[in-house]
Image (tube, rainbow, N blue to C red):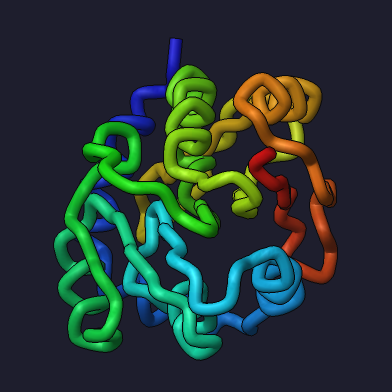
Length: 202
């Protein structure tokens, strides 16, 4: 049975969007090296979907600076409102990554610090959606936990839910849904000890 805090993720990111954005803006941009690897796999000026985009900073902002076309998906209305104001050239949609209608495919798919807020069963189901979203040759990049289980953090005094599958399960799901693994780093010390996956759609 999933920890009850799993259901409150959308509520927390709506209620405390400003606090989260302030904290994120003050954080060091440690994601750059991994985003550069992602960019190396992208078609120039390609269309990228950012799942759980937040306010658009720093992930979408960096991709936009390289001329990519961004579509951001997030379930937090304050985040989407901020993203639209800061980056009007991109497309921002108030949607749930688990259920929004898929009508097109993209040259790149990214779910940075968002996918790991889903339950383990929801994460398994997302791989079919990743496959639907990605064109042949498109990179997929996401962050995960380091082992099978749930981890409950704290944000503004509230429980912040995370979960992860076993790394071997992620590998199996990538293969099953048509992705080849390009790179995996367990708890990368240069990127805030995130566990990071970069794959490519066959």
